[in-house]
Amino acid sequence: MKKIIAYILLVAILFSFDGIWAKNEPNDKEKEIRAFLGEAYIADEDYQSAIEEYNEILKEDPKNVKARIGLADILSWEGKFKDAIKLYREVLRDEYDREAKRKLADVLSWDKKYSKTIFLYNELLDEKYDKRIACQKARVLGWWKKYDESLKAYRDAYRKSKDELIALEMSAKEAYWNSRVEEAITAYSELIEKDPENVEAMFDLSQIYSYQSMWKQATGEYEKILEVHSGNFRAREGLEKAELISSHILSNTAYDYFEADSPSRHNDIRRHSSFEEVSVPINDSLKITAATYLTTRYFRDFNDVFENNDAIKAVFVKGPDYRIEGFYSFFAYNKGIKAMHNFGGVFDVRIFDIGTANFSYERERLENNSTVIREHYYRDRFKERIDIDVNKWLKLGADFIFAYYSDYNYKTEPGFDLLYFFSIDPLRFSVKYRYYFREFSEKEDQYFSPKGFTVNKITLNWRHYLNKEEVFFGANDLYYDLNYEVKIDSETIVGHGFSGELNWDINKRLNINVKGKILNSSANVYNDKSFIASVKYYF
Image (cartoon, rainbow, N blue to C red; front, top):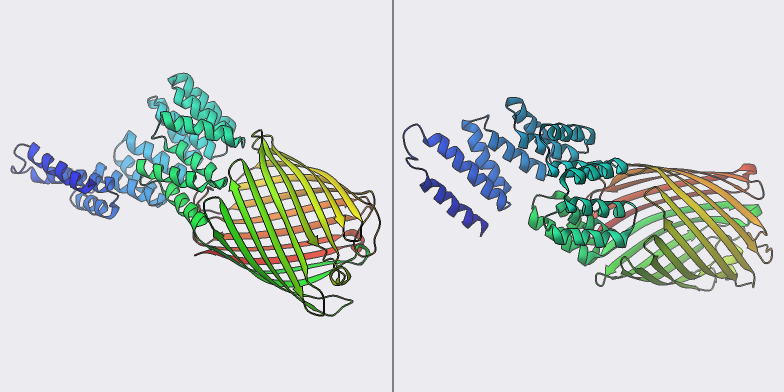
């Protein structure tokens, strides 16, 4: 339909020019008509035909501004930022065009050249104040993670324009950045109702919905964005990812190695595992996962043991309000060892829009050495935890664990932690402090069961995203993650841990992840090693 309308308009243009076929005029008129046709093709999302029309213009007139800007627009929508930037700059070198300069600034921001973007926006605002450019400057400062500067820019834009939509967008952004999920959803919904073509607000809201597993709402927002601006590549990528997660089967195939060696703390674990998990979305809220784990265990004091673990899990999410999970797993062994059954559940609920409360129960077997496996030791573990988002930079958490053991022993373990981000994605650096106190009613010989045992731990984390684009839901993430932890317990044993991770979304469907960790202690009291490699694929 759009093409038909475009052709009708083109014919109207043809006949509206008197003497259009007069001598010495056809070339200019033809270029003008081709430019209109290029715009019609863009409106119909037929970018290849638009490119052909613009190239025809440039054959006759290599300096044609409208054709070059049109080509640069298409390149930017296709994610070819560097080519688009080059073309906009060529236009500006030949003659000044304010619209080309604004578009250059926009594409520089998409290419994460934030400093250059802000410089150009400031020049444009100095030339002539434009509230749209002022608002876009505030947005880009937010993308750059300069939140205080972004809010200042929003306030300045509102002060000069008195536009209530700018004030509402600022409030929505502030709630979003501070993880006030419910407040942000309300503010963005109100903003979009008043400004239905605010793509920035729609995209932010779609991201919130996606991270809260609200797939129906997320896909709806992505589709609305594409109706307003069909060239929005972030919305296209977000929509594709949301549809994959919400309606496609996920396979996770992995290999896992773990070793924990501590004679004084009753640890003798060496195991190699391979497993396959298959997750099936039943609807937008419910997902069922079935898994099979094949494990070979090696012990110092017993023969090697083969273990087969089959598990099933159901997860129901009503974002952002609550999440319910239930699971069951069955362990079978050779060497005459009887089967074991594990089961449990988790309930997460959002509290006062400042964090989450978590309640969980699990019947879990002990596996720290051959004796506890052969004699069917298990525990019933109850855990309560609260996580508070103070703001974008500071998170607080506290928890309490009560565990009742099959030998009638029990454990209590209160703890708390503090997480602070010095910087966030794409260059994330954080420090986390955790303290916990562990008390058993009785000391036992088969598992580590101290009395009055305390641990203080500090963890430093560095994660670097190497994405071509910004970090957002739907992007193909490529990052490495490095961790260092140091902990000291009440027995004056100091532990040092080093871990690393490499994650690569080869495309929307295929992901590869590799992790490894080494943990050593003073006096060689404990030594842990782990390695896991997984391949995930959406069918």
